[in-house]
Amino acid sequence: MANTPYTDNHGGTDVAPPPANTKLIWRTFIILCVITAFEFLIAFTMTAGPLRVFIFVGMTIIKAFYIVAEFMHLKHEVKSLIWAIMLPIIFIIWLLIALMYEGGSIFQLR
Image 1: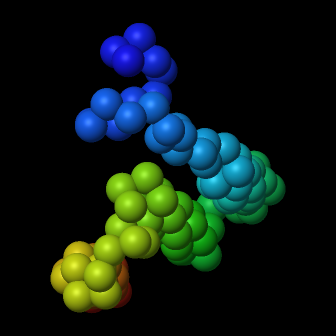
Image 2: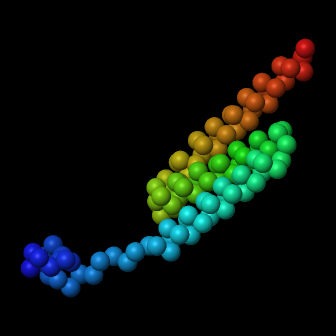
Image 3: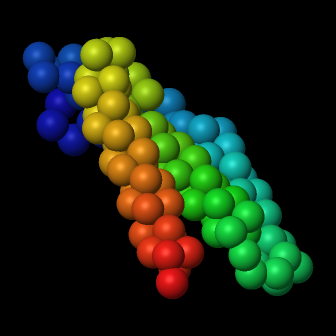
């Protein structure tokens, strides 16, 4: 029985291997590729400016959340854990926006 490829902990041989999630992996790959291709399109066609930076930051955050949800399995956790992680990130993003806004006002005083 030890030579059988799929055995359970009790010596039985009727346990099948878990099904492969190749469709989920390919879907994730395609979604991330499309977002990255759109980022490259914006990088090479749009002139530099605040709108381009805002689009890049937004798409990077979307990709990061998608990667965390899929590969770190946060999507399948309880809602309280998701909010415990998301709420500080939202406040950090708000802080960065506020600091950039206030930091830009120093050039208006001169």
